Length: 130
Figure (cartoon, rainbow, N blue to C red):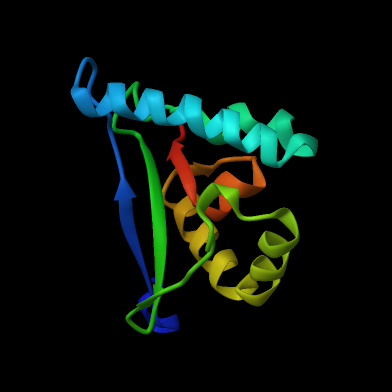
């Protein structure tokens, strides 16, 4: 459906199995990341839980993060990861409005729900509708 527009969706992360070393490392990284985020972006501290929680990746394989490739090159939607400032996220969202709208629409048509937080939405975090 998206290839006609030169777009390809690529899975970037899936399930974190319970009790694995990687899951423990992710948990520690989330705590550190949340702390740094709240210090750097005090005005955005209410977003920290949405951004740094496992967002369902620890419950099942139904949660995915997707990247977009346009004509074979990955789009950089969060150049500083989750630490990308909101003003830059808004600028990038305007620049790639068409590509994002097509990707989000295709994912929703396939039964996924896009995360409501603007940063997570740009990371294209989504999960299967239950």
